[in-house]
Amino acid sequence: MNDSHTIKSPSPTNKSEIWTLITEKLTQEQKIALENVVDFRKYPEQKCEGFQLPSGSSMWILLEGHANIVMQNFEGKQIRLLRMNAGDFIPMTLKCQDPFHIEIAVEKQSETCFIPDTIRSRLMSDSEEIRNIELIANAAIVAKLVELIAELAFLPLTDRLMHVIEELCSEQQSRAIRVTHEEIANELGTAREVTSRLLKQMAEQGRLKLSRKRIVVIEGKNKRMRQE
Image (cartoon, rainbow, N blue to C red; front, side, top):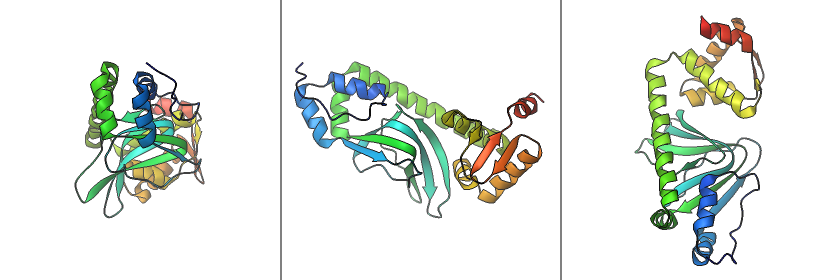
């Protein structure tokens, strides 16, 4: 393989296994073709507006940051389908029928990459490793969606709310997280007023401390509540 041609690199913090495999497996001709069509996008640190996958793209890679895959209806109501971390990717174009549509809401400083279907098909054909990773990714997505369905069907809203808060604590690596009530409501697919009422109840129970755009989780209290 001739490696004299190098692909424009994403940020040094990229830990995407799929991207590493893609760049390692390509011939010089394929690298040039990929460089001409790959769509890198960077987003600033603040919250970004949601955007839909570009037409024709069938592989979307989150190289850096965090993102939510959300489904929204014409009234603006939405629910989070998937939470993505750096290195995760969506190996197929996400579509749904009207009146719903799929958006990607990027959080924090982030970098994404879109690979068109023609290039993705060639990569899948040429590399068993990439095919295996795509199969694993598809299985993981199905598992996450099944988990979401189970939560919607069987878990009380308070438990789902706490699950979202714990995920945010893990992502922000802190028990004091920066998030608004509306953002949490969007992830749960419920009204902001309902979310605010539940958060207030949890604060009165001593499980949380609330302030403007900030929630502090009281570790010991939540452990005791779960045990009870």
